[in-house]
Image (tube, rainbow over all chains, first blue to last red; front, side):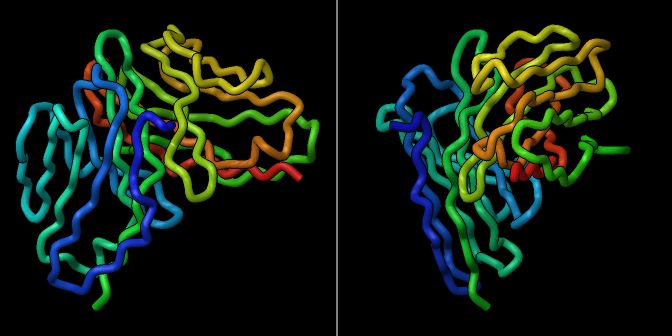
Amino acid sequence: QKEVEQNSGPLSVPEGAIASLNCTYSDRGSQSFFWYRQYSGKSPELIMSIYSNGDKEDGRFTAQLNKASQYVSLLIRDSQPSDSATYLCAGRGPGSARQLTFGSGTQLTVLP
Amino acid sequence: GAGVSQSPRYKVAKRGQDVALRCDPISGHVSLFWYQQALGQGPEFLTYFQNEAQLDKSGLPSDRFFAERPEGSVSTLKIQRTQQEDSAVYLCASSPQTSTGELFFGEGSRLTVL
């Protein structure tokens, strides 16, 4: 079992809809979580970070964390074709761990 | 300001050849990471440097993989006696602090081993 699991998709939503991306993790010691966006052939870029239970909103993006359920999600409101990309969920452990552990990514397509 | 720069962007090697991949992080960034990304997969951690010290190399898949960052800036990932399973994109990322999850990735070096 991978430490960070994501549905690989692909996920397709119409333009203007809400896209919901989900992620579960196995290490209860993981303290912080991140969503990276990766366009085809490009490198990942950070779009959201979340450290405590609850919701965190930034523009059209909302990250949700539920540590009891070991669940992280990303909602994209008013989805645009430019949001079409692979979304990578990543977790970072406690203590001296510095690296991020990434899921395999969910491919999102927003249809015009 | 320049981002993370990696070279070469593309490398084709014959099985058994040695390759060296270079990473030039953002100036002043303390932390440097190497990840390996296979097609359709997320990045897999290889190794981590804090300044010139290699603090974690637990992700290196075999002793054919070696990384260094001798002066705490530029880093080189070396793969000896390449195998077909080494074919992947090798991503370098840097971070200004040791305690943040915000990584700035380079464009990657795509290695194809024939």
